[in-house]
Image (tube, rainbow, N blue to C red; front, top):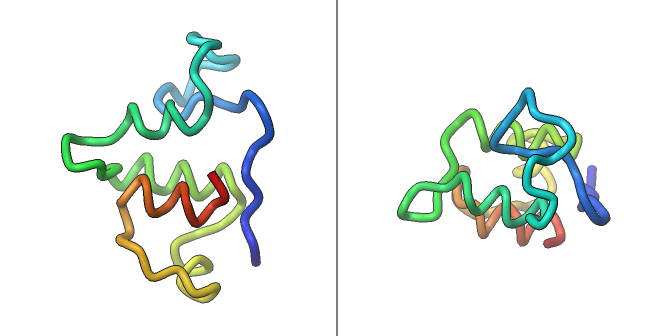
Length: 82
């Protein structure tokens, strides 16, 4: 199951109840990176949200060959096509 990256603007990852985006100048990738801690890691909620936004799970990523860290935003975004 290959994940597909969003084209253009997409739901705000950092504000689950805020649609459309509050900051329309931020891309989806920028929103994901904004949600990371100082080590570039997403918490469990945002990791699941990112994967759910792309119709996948960590289990499916691993089945497809993903070998990055589970919560590493850069690894996940790269795998998802950003």
